[in-house]
Length: 492
Image 1: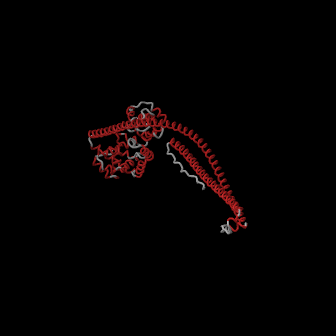
Image 2: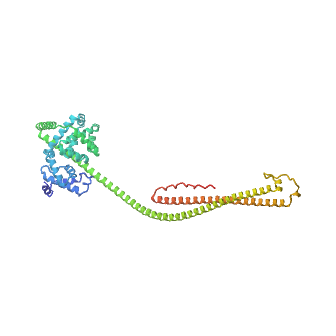
């Protein structure tokens, strides 16, 4: 078969112009078939042309390109042709095109009888509208739902067809009518035709909706015996009509039916052409929008690259500034640590001096007290002085006159008073030095606290500037500096 296919595509076909016209209308929005002269259209043209040469009695029929395109999306070109031949011959799809579509009309009658049995209210509504089965179901049988319905649904139907046979069309058709019953009962003649042509296929663009429809179709019972019964009824009815009908009337009726079918097919062709033009316009608009968007994105990309370069340059500058600030801070920190050590040493030295002064004062006070005790002891031991001072150190009333005291007592008294004034003066100077030392220590403590605050402020300022510079360069908000903790002051 493969060798024969290669031979068939080299032969001429009388229907090449029709095939070429239909190729451009077959799935015009699909990526594989949308390009004129592309691989998809070229392979589809070869398959349709090869079949028109292979089947001389039927040739190429309008709508076959959709079935061939579906097969071509799943397998190579040669295999798609072989499967198309298999479906047309072994599955009986070819018979629908024979004998002036006689077998197709039998399928219409069978479907109408099934609708009358399973959907009587919808059948009655169609009869009132004079809406016949061939007006909406022709494409269902001739193209196996491939011409109008979404591919996600068509793929399921082809799978079921290859497994169950051509009668699966009745299952899918009844499932479609059952799910659309409420909408069809409310529609008039024109509204029903438009519903079948436009609204019904749109319902199954979602994969989930198509899957549920296939489940419902598989659950519908269509007995083969019943179909054969309806087929016999149709044949009996046709024989009766042929016997009773005048040949001229029959020809006129057939001619009228063919004209109606031709008009309907032309209308469908016009619809497909309009859909093709609309799809191409939509694709062109989408392409223009995509190109405009691509230009905008390219401009934004260039701006982003430029900003990135600027950001990297700013980052480099910030890193250099950060390194400089680190060096400055390191020097300031070393200087501050040196000042702190120096101040600490001075404070320790002053504390030591104060301690020494305190020790000296205490020693002098003790020595003065001892000297006073010694003087007091001597005075108490003196016969003349003991009468003047009491044991508690208070003066006694003079028992003798001034003339009896003598020159020695006056001199000793003056000497003691002078020594006492000197000791009091030395004590006052020592206390003054102690107070001055404490004041100096407090001043140094204050300077140390101020210096620590300056160092902490310098740390926080440098840290905040560095983080703010880095965060500003990266486009984020700067971090807030941590709160300054005052160093505890030493008690004076």
